[in-house]
Amino acid sequence: MKEMKNEDIQKCNLFFLDTNTERIVFSEINKDGKFELLFTSHRCAEITVKGVSKASGIAFLAGTMNIRQDEIIAVGDSENDFTMIRYAGLGVAMGNAIPALKNEADFVTTSNNHDGIALVIKQFILNN
Image (tube, rainbow, N blue to C red; front, side, top):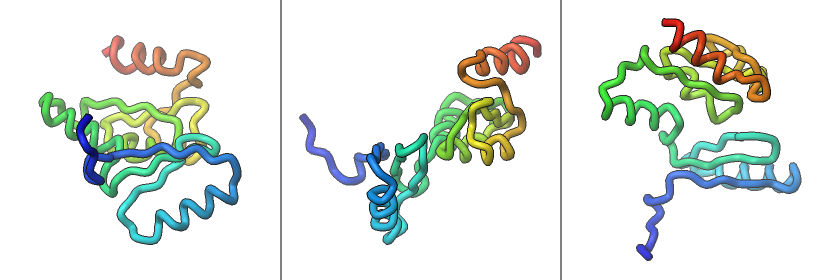
């Protein structure tokens, strides 16, 4: 197995048992400003290297496939989805998304339990 270097690690997921530990960890990690810290759900967070995000991943992939930004639809529900919602030509929040993401999105679909992605595909891809 290859020896890993710090620059090989792009993302780390953290799961917290209590809010106090969560605050302490976030405070320590935020000190040097090298990382992005985002919640993905209740008591679950991800740490990425500064500049690594869902938007940067989508932009890289789109660039290699010659896909224009205005042709991209991104769908999300959590704090870690803000960058891709803002980047995409059409940013969609799930019905069960956090309120702030719904406010940022171009469109809010139904929840993940009510075929929200299927609705987006039907409305914005198949009907065009």
